[in-house]
Amino acid sequence: MSLSTAAPGVGMGEETPEQEHPPFRIKPLSPTIGVEIEGIDLRQPLDDGTCKAMRAALIRHKLLVFRDQDITPAQHVRLAGRFGELEVHPVFNHHPDHPELVLLGGDQQVRARENIFHTDVSWRECPSMGSMLRCIECPEVGGDTLWVNMAAAYDNLPEDVKERLVALYAVHDVMPAFGARMTPQEREINRHKFPPATHPVVRTHPESGEKILYVNEAFVTHLANYNQVAEMRMGFDFRLGEMDLLQYLYRQAAAPEYQIRLRWRPNTIAFWDNRSTQHYAIQDYFPAVRRMMRATIIGDRPR
Image 1 (cartoon, rainbow, N blue to C red):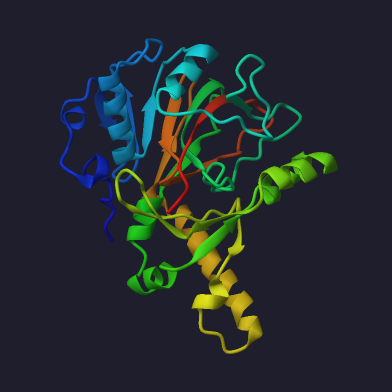
Image 2 (image 1 turned 45 degrees about the vertical axis):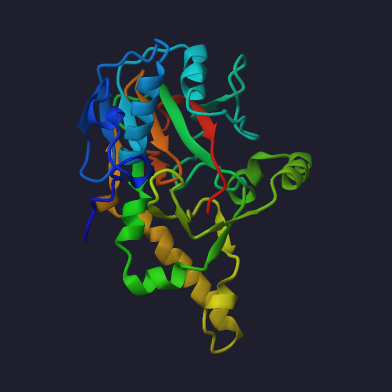
């Protein structure tokens, strides 16, 4: 089983100068995904060369971790905005002065509910390119987050499974995860604004060219065209076969070989490529409090 699926360079070409000599230090966190970035102060505006180097590192390693970054909400927005236009989430609470910043976490009465493998906002027609998540407060023990390299997950699928996935599309829907948080009126409005989105089961990374397994159990409800590509003995074979295949694909994210587990501390920032990863926020700390702020960068339509 090969786990070496990091992109050799932006656009799969030769390494750029920013990759060969980045203006910061890179410390690997696992063989498969994730590095810690040292020697950079994110309170300061980034020059173009540093932004290019950081983006190249993001594409290659998929998760960048920065420690001891005591940035303000305004600096958080400015930093994330260097990598693209920022979204405003339609359901989560926002920072009062910066609607681009989502406020995540429960309290001593309500558990947080991000403990499911997912790709952020895959229910959008154009899901996010990436997210920057900053820890504001966390328990001394517990509340870690897992990230998964979904390019490695695809690369290590059996060849016969890969062949089955070539022409398949999955339907991603906001309602299963977020509908219960909305009033009936909000559900009606958001159903109109965010109809289910159909994306390829295997998407191609627009910058690295990697193939990525792009289904997640939080938002994918079914396969859009399974009955067109699968052989069926009789009608109920379609539904059973579809459910079996989806469950098999969901389970790939749970393989520890594709994962990194990050232990948070205040002022840690995680910046991940949402196109090639999934993540899972472990809910093992209630009633302790874990508070986060997230800025999310708008991406492209999966192809």
